[in-house]
Image (cartoon, rainbow, N blue to C red; front, side, top):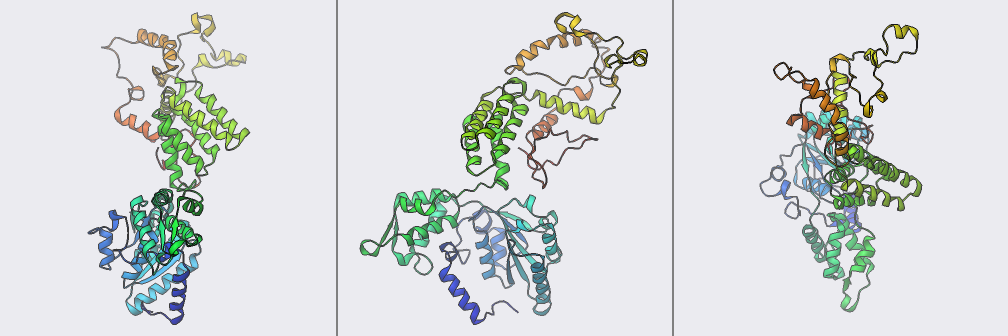
Length: 510
């Protein structure tokens, strides 16, 4: 049936819903002229605004935080397009609903030459099979898809579906934009709170805008609750104070989701703050995560990883201290155990930094994967039997304790890797002492080196890292996959060019 034909029951239902709906729903902008914010995608002259105005819409994914206007944009499109608008919520709909909608869209296109706009709210809640069910109809143009999601589409929307739609990113509203919506609701007598003659004290207004955290829905619903709960005073007016707003909000609108995008962004920020020796910012991101309900043991695992990845032997106390913090979380629970994490984070941030062991082990894995796995040299093998001794096992081995300072010159690598150097201690913290202790190996290597004219080119595997190599190690550092089924990224990452042991998918990089 072409768009626009409603029954009497439809009109009555819409009128009742409009009357009883929450303020945020009643005050939804009805046109792009009323729409507040998101100038980067619906401002004058922008592609999406022109497509909506000219009714030449294409499949799109709207990605943004709660209360940023995704559903409102979809409803504006519904009011302006000549296409049939079919809304679905991924929370309640399934494959059967998608099949019904696409069948009706096919019939509608054939009988009335009318397109169908399919709006799927919370599209990230659809699994792969459900998303695949709509894919052929998006591809051939039977339906124009509008998907709304609070999660990163890169990880939550099938790549095939994503390639057939354009992603538009909506930002959280600024305090000024929230203020425009709040003032509009207070003064609107038809859909808003104008009939209540409510006045918002200046400090209460500032508090509401701040605590809404960019979420227009949170701001409007809290405002409505405060106004309705406030009895009228002199002159039938209601003065809304900070206490009224605080009582209506109860707590700040939290944007943290321990299973969503901010989970990865926040741990990345915490890791980088520790690496960059900024204890104040590190504590802030730790607090954001814990306040948002993040699993403290997840953070503890990542903090232990920071100790071995970014501090290493520059401060050997970093690792046992972070393990102690993990044990404290087990023993004390929350909130007391949170202080142990805070202490560990501050300690790591101020500690000297070194990734020398991390780089050395990465180079080792590269050689293990890309060179011949030659046998252990005979002099390093144990010889528990007469046969093995006869075969030369252990022959010529020099026992370190028989030499001064237990330092002995003998080859420990297989022939194809002789001369390799992996671990190069820095001059930071305790590693400066390690560098002094290992100076003898450099002296021996220099003494054993042939004259410069006869010296072969240094093997590429032990050459000084190029700019590209350095970037590769930086890319590897702190990687954490968001792929389904992956862990928290605690394993050592193998080099991306490893032939035998390929690197895990990078997911998001820290």
